[in-house]
Image (tube, rainbow, N blue to C red):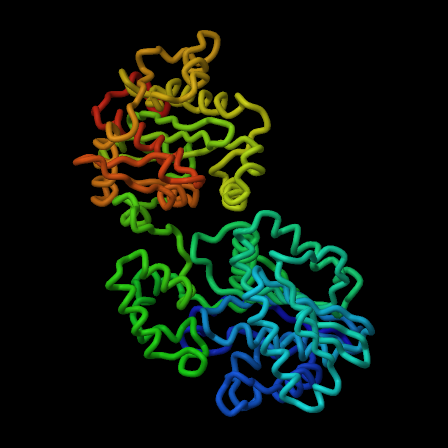
Length: 562
């Protein structure tokens, strides 16, 4: 029999999800295998639902479609699963943990490999128990299963008495996954792994056994993150979106992503309760409609930060910029001021007539941030471009932010350097490029932290290198003395008079910035912002403090003809 031809891309997913249709664009590759899996799955009892119904009595089509695709991907003749990875992104309370635990119990029941290992990997013990309990309870609720399986609560393990196969639920914060010969792996709440340093290597270890298990599979089940996606979660989510949209050809991955179409997000239609169904296929079953509506109303009263948290967890809306209660006022308007057409340095320089530069940070535990502010030709709006550098040692000393930094590096907005001085040299090279292009401000042009490192000034004024005159380098007072620049920046951002490149790096820095009131003045500093970095944002304030002086360019732009 010739192998089936299929694609896991779903280019019309936006129409499908709004219409409430299946997000799986094909029927099971092997219908008999799908039927066998669903026959077992549907007979399992759901103990925490009143009346202890079977899955078949309560499961909606989206659940059986997904489970059927997992079991229906196994070629029984070749004993090979043709789709090996499954990615389910779904809002909170849509029976995700029940689906996870009972799918794995079904896989263990149908398994024919002796001593096979099925693993549910969760980020915490609490999440691990959420997956383990439905499977355990289903065994206890059925005399046949209770005879077939041995349940060991203290080990969170369910063992098949005939094949010796085990279903083990492991919390990543308490146990190791090294050396596992996994046949089936389910990863719960992948978004939380995105915050864990070393999570990528942990998942590689957990999947190691699949190399010798052609019938093996991996299922990722997750909600959206309560912060901007980072680390392994961000990587796998972006890849899954690419497969779904058809820009990545990978028929061995099936992405089922319950998220709002972009046109609905732009119109803020996700905030209309009548659209809550879009990312909640179990709405009215495991998801209570009045509960969601009440929680949303409460979030609206509490403010935009609470609304975004609600949207992320209950409606799967990705957070681009997290808002804190003590946030900088400009954070509320930052996203709407994004303009991806000025993301590259070349594009930025082509649109401006004069540039000032701001530099901040540079310690071995810090980022070194550079922000250029340019006055746009004709419109006179302020355009900004930012980049950051980090010493490799930061990835070890600040493991809590390492996944985010590596993501910014992948975006091209942050550079990891191996030796002190490489970052300073790179900053100098960019400022010199601006100067040589005739765009650097005449007069005060480069603003640096008054308490910053001298290496920046030394490099910029090196007569054999940059030769930026010392009187063009200004020590910008920090703390409350920076209040004027901070206020100017937030007003221009709110009024659409300042545009930025809409990078995740700067959104992260803006999210991290916390304000402190000093009398009538407000300050933003690194001490109150904690270990999360804000150096490129401080560089923005430094640069804007000089652009506020309304400078002229020192020379003609090299784009102008003679």
